[in-house]
Amino acid sequence: MESQLERYKKDLDALIAKGEVLAFALLKQFSMLEYLRAVMMLSPKERDRFLGSLPLFTNEYQPWYSEAMALVRQLLPDRLEDFISHYKTPTIRSIITMENYRIEDFLQGLEFKYTSSGTVKLRGPDAAITHFQQQLAIVKAVNARFESALFDIRQLVQADLFDSELEAASELLKHKFTRAAGALAGVVLERHLVQVCENHHITIKKESPSISYLNDLLKNGTVIDTTQWRYNQRLGDIRNLCDHCKKSEPTKEEVEDLIAGVTKVIKSIF
Image 1 (cartoon, rainbow, N blue to C red):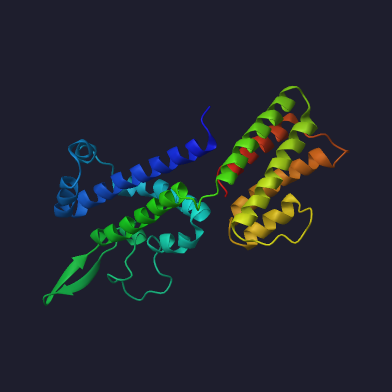
Image 2: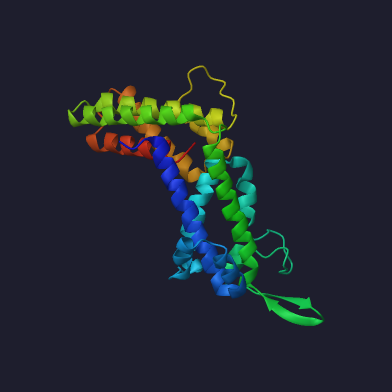
């Protein structure tokens, strides 16, 4: 069976490979000379990969950006603001210049004028090349961290344990032990949120913190956004129904949602 470590590494490698393809696609579209120079620096085997059909950057960038941003947020949070700044346009900007042009401008097809040797010229999408190259470099830095001793292997071992416990919860549900299945999945969620707080140096003041309390800490610490906070709250509500509420029984569908939701959370929030 593939381990959690192997799955994470495979996903990260795929994200970097996709980014490299997009970088070459951007160069080919707006800077053919740089593109050819970059291709010639590759090995003959690698050249085939980038000399063939390349995707259209504007079609493929947003999915890559969303996945990469989530990755940076979890594994290299101190670089998240830098990563986003290469995409997002400055909030205060009277005119577009080389210094404040961003990938977001490129995706909107915006151009700006600049003066070179006394001649006014148009500049636009090609100015986004450097910004994307910087974003890709940050993602590769995540890879370096992943492979270094700085990455906490204990968390990956814990993630494998969580997987086993969620499999056990699924078996309990299969044999109609609905409350027990939901309670076990809830414990996994609670323990994972505690670990996420520790990862981001968020102080937990309660001796026995609830899912709701931990969820609020992560939202207030900007580790998760409002949408994720609401999702976690929903999972916590189902867990409470399994643990505490004796007036109504949790349904099989609710506990299935809880197990699937916890599985998603432990693989996307670190």
